[in-house]
Image 1 (cartoon, rainbow, N blue to C red):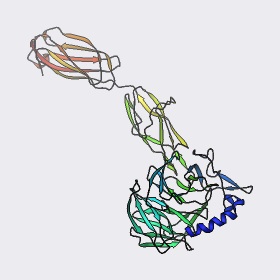
Image 2: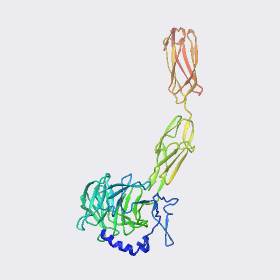
Image 3: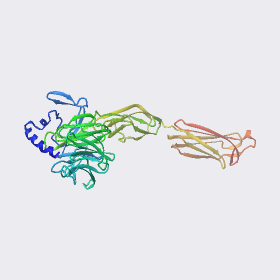
Length: 473
């Protein structure tokens, strides 16, 4: 590439009057911005996004959703799951920058041992770049660098004029750019060739893997190529927004590449949706009905195509107030009613809402009164308990003794007030008398209990009563 550049400089001077776009006659330049802010494409779907070439409207088959300015001479792109990284080709070739993909802001990360960055990639821990110092008889090297720029390891590559590097599960993709035709290699961690095929253009600068595809940024071709890595077949080609694309990387949702734009003061970084992004909101609940208080576990089932959902907004009672921003929230309904639930999901640009009408039915809290065992001894003891899930108010009880002789008194009653769920109260009644020994004449003790909520119950037991002592049969 160094030899090619000397020739290219002459060509640039000759064509200077044509402007940067004139360098490549088949180049389409759209959406280049001379500012440092992200420039999203608003109100355009993938099929609507168009550019104008000589007065003719030509549909674009991918969508640039943001554009940032980055340092001049950016070469190679890498992504570590949080940040983007770019190297530099030229006078500041030892520099590597860290880039915030949300804002485009960048800062110098380190000065490394490389003379120039001919591509960049990330292996899960370290950055890699290719460099080829020395004469044309010296092989280029793949250099493993830590995040401080220290050289961890390196190995020789198949040729001197090599550029681009993409990590592939312990192996690497690299390419030659001189002599023509260019060749793409897959090599192992020692530089031994595993596979090779002819590149679709003659100036590959950077490579990356996107799912099962290999992408190549071609510097003088002003084109991004999608390649089948199994056989080298060309799958797609896309003109770059500016000229001289020198870095490319996939972040799991978007393709990023950088080029010179239409000037040479700084480079441009583009965030590209390879196909139209879509989001479909959906959710389910582990239970959709029951008595109050009703605790419901909601599960997000939303689907995102070519994008990533980053926010969840739940409205559990259709009052237009966001009740939760968790992906899978838990919500407790304390009041009876029929509730409509909605979920809105978004990737920060597009969103979708799913509303399930009358989805949750909450019944009034159930009040259930229970009479425990009627026990004897020095009187009669009865346990009265609220075993429901709602408060029992104005709880009244009545104890009646029927049969037997000389039993005084024969009734007892009272008001226990309110029993909350799970609360139990013991009631004691002390009759006096002498019971008969034959079963037909034994007294019968009957306990009834009721509350304002309508719950009532009754329980009876036979007994013998001798003075103050009660024996339950």
